[in-house]
Length: 422
Image 1 (tube, rainbow, N blue to C red):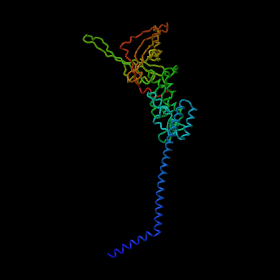
Image 2 (image 1 turned 135 degrees about the horizontal axis):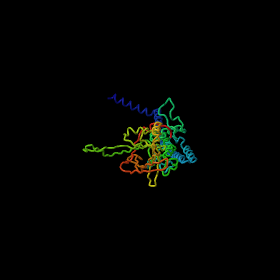
Image 3 (image 1 turned 90 degrees about the vertical axis):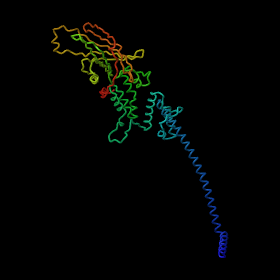
Image 4 (image 1 turned 120 degrees about the horizontal axis):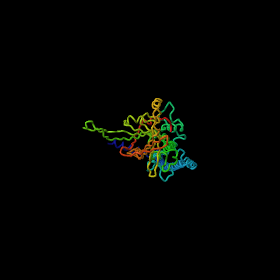
């Protein structure tokens, strides 16, 4: 026990001596000073970081506001350029580029801008507005993508020349070959689904104006009441050239009585009338009992080798009651008698030479889902003109149940080949 007390006393004495040591006090003071300086620096760093964050947030807000203002000015410039005000467009382009130099690459066209801004709206309520806005949207995209926009760009690397390398004039000439002289506008619409550039080319007003001129003649110079030539071609009543109009007539006819008088035969008679219109104003009319599967392929051209074929011209007439009528005059081909026939019947009195022509009047209307797919009879007569006297005899036929309406049937083979461009 005495030893333990002596040890404790020695320990207390050592602590008192260490407390009075000046070196230890100096080290403690240095430690406290260093500790306080670290605390002061940490608090100052937190204040500095807060100020930096606030400055960054303010700068970010300013950048967003500047970009929004530049977007507004750029869209306003695009709108002015579309309206033809080039100088105003340049002014707004310059103002937008001064705010954000690369603003043309930062504009997002996926959503329409506000109505109160200069950019306008890309969407409309009606279908025609959507088509027109889509056309403007594609044109803007191609313009903004490059200073020298191309109609289209290849999706993969090619070793051969791509169609995008062709000038726009040559590409439009190719499109005219696609439409062809048969006015295959359906192929043009399908071609517009390839890409944005083809969509823009397929909406070229010159192509649709040429198509309208082929249908309604050179007098077709005014758009009113339509907004575009394409709208006129699609909505104005017209006959269709990519198929054939077919009328089927059937009836029951009483036959002759048998020799023993026990029974009398009844015959079911069935025949077809075919009308094929061509864009150059020609029309072909055929009346035959043959099935459409045999006759329709032979009506692709005007050079048809059939005995019952009638060739002629047609015209469209727009009446005051907003009804479109088709009037056609058809006649048989002039077949010259052979030398053998002339020598054989030279002693007989030849019949008076006469020209037979048939005048047909039809009312054009829509049937079912297809537009302009039905033709209803309104007139049919035969005109016989004697060459010797110049007299004309007209015989009008009664339009009874034997004159059934014509219904249109599209034939793909009629527009499978292009003979001439539009």
